[in-house]
Length: 65
Image (cartoon, helix red, strand yellow):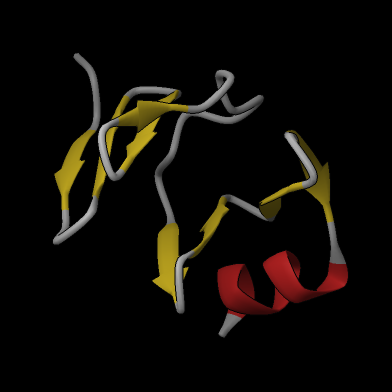
């Protein structure tokens, strides 16, 4: 079963992510914990930054807290 989440401008189905109708590359994670702040997306400790999903401290912060 896929995890499906829909926010104002963000849709997440499994590891596929759309922001404002634009599909991003698949996230390395399944999207159990997602946060969207000021147009930035954080999924399970990954942040979409410069066209790639990267593990960042900021993304881990949103995962844990």
